[in-house]
Figure 1 (tube, rainbow, N blue to C red):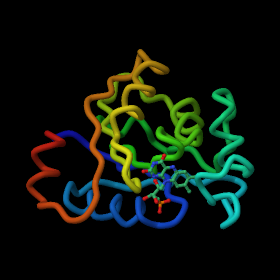
Figure 2 (figure 1 turned 90 degrees about the horizontal axis):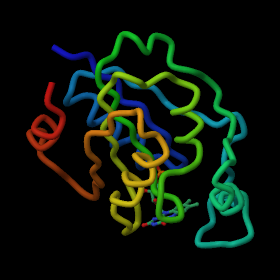
Figure 3 (figure 1 turned 45 degrees about the horizontal axis):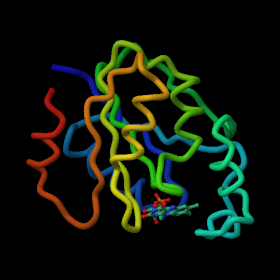
Length: 156
Ligand SMILES: Cc1cc2nc3c(=O)[nH]c(=O)nc-3n(C[C@H](O)[C@H](O)[C@H](O)COP(=O)(O)O)c2cc1C
């Protein structure tokens, strides 16, 4: 049986609630990706072209510092990575996380929450940026789902 960890970033709680639910269904560990400098309410106003998140997302090389690294990445075969979609793709803090933790050789699934944007572009962008990582598939969740959907999605 493969060991799974659900790693997530969440600015306002939606992705965190979902991550905990998914981890419970999979009997997985969890890891919260936290920025050193937390995002304030003003930072999170969107679609704005005049705030921190927009500036960070516009600069494709920007990497917000994160508080902590995975302690024992070698313990896991499967990484389930969750985030809110920001400006149509994955927040740059997800790049920070990927680049600071060695995910080579693991199966990586991604999930997102959003107002409306699907996960397709986030998945494509990440696959392109990190061709050595095995991204298996991505899903966006809105509303409820059956436990079986998660178990069928993440085969382990
Ligand atoms: C800076 C920012 C950018 C966002 N960009 C998008 C977007 O492009 N498309 C979309 O559907 N929702 C967008 N949203 C909405 C979030 O994806 C959505 O509210 C998400 O569920 C928040 O998750 P969280 O509570 O875990 O932070 C954006 C929200 C913020 C704060």
